[in-house]
Image 1: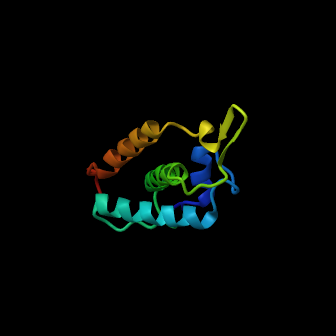
Image 2 (image 1 turned 90 degrees about the vertical axis):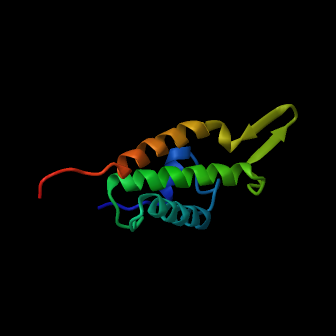
Length: 117
């Protein structure tokens, strides 16, 4: 079993500790864990999960991070100098790519496993 870390979420977006605090990402991981539990109708633990569950939680938490960063409360992440604008979001993957990846993983997690015991 594996676990989701704040660095996993940052890696998806190419962010650093200065871009978004650990405490915020930890909350996003917990929210993503609960959302995945509701979707799958089973208990999921971000500290002890399968690889697929880890990916789903990580990507959903990254989507939450993008929403956080673009929501206006991320002061200091975007700035301008003259006619040049710089934003930490310039290097993050497009939101629709992350959403598509999450939906693909979720579909796989929802498919019933047929096998022998």
